[in-house]
Length: 411
View 1 (cartoon, rainbow, N blue to C red):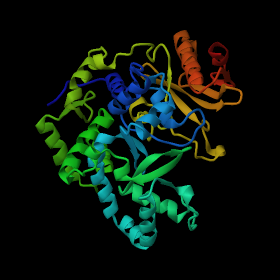
View 2: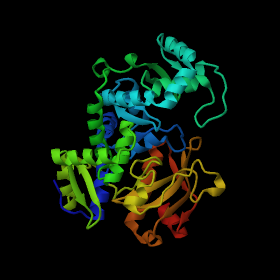
View 3: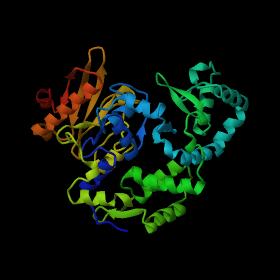
View 4: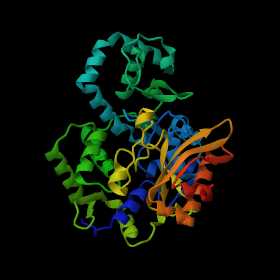
């Protein structure tokens, strides 16, 4: 099935809408967080807390009155979601049978098998310990190894191995440190089983489309391989995408005479609504939209991270937090600014929790002329104020802006 050609603006709005970011927040509180996690793409967990943690900022951008304890409850009390992956994402618990196939494939890889063989006794000891209750990495002294990105302790690496290969799951957090437990002690009984390989591959093929909103064949194949933990198979991937089209599970469209773009068939009506200039009913926002109040996007926001901001929004964005200060172009903790369906600027931010003040070392607009747009300036100011209040602040301090004349009206 082929849908009519779409404009770049339609693509931007559709991708943002699929992620729960356009035309604005559409749900509230813990139920809203639950809905956002089911409806949007993957929320990436990150421990760094400058304004807030990236996963909490991502949910704040989607959910009115969101609080970090809402996600903690969904993950570690009601067990409706779980965290998993080399890139750590929040996933619906109902998907666990499919992810167990991913985990088994990871366990069968040469690197995993070599690690298991080398650390056989340690892994057996850890399994026995965890069978008596949740454990954390800090519960063990561990033997030191040459430093890696994640940990230099053999016990930490072994616990992570058992977690990535599916024997352990996250039971909860001690501070932000993961508490590991056996899968049977975390996941509900009804999702303990593993799907078949074919079932998992079919699920991940569809999930890859849903996550991307609109995808080229190349982007879909890359995401599918990542989710399903499969090696590159161009011929097989072309056949699988063709089967999604033939079965009616996927729809094809394009921008002008550009390459084909694919989306889930169940979202075709929403794409048509956006193309015709309206907002799909399910996307309606009960309060201010992003034109009225700008949204500050999390550094690891799926829409903008890893080159997607440049591809769809012509917005050059790289999170520079791990770069040496001298090599940063913008700043330490920079967040893109979403206004309507445009990324209009970026702000380097940090929270002074003692002074209860959100500090803006620098805020940049993409186009200097935008500083003369009073509605845009007001929307950014309202977005800053909401972010400050969410982070526990009473005030916002703006140190510098580009253009410089923006600082006074924004303040």
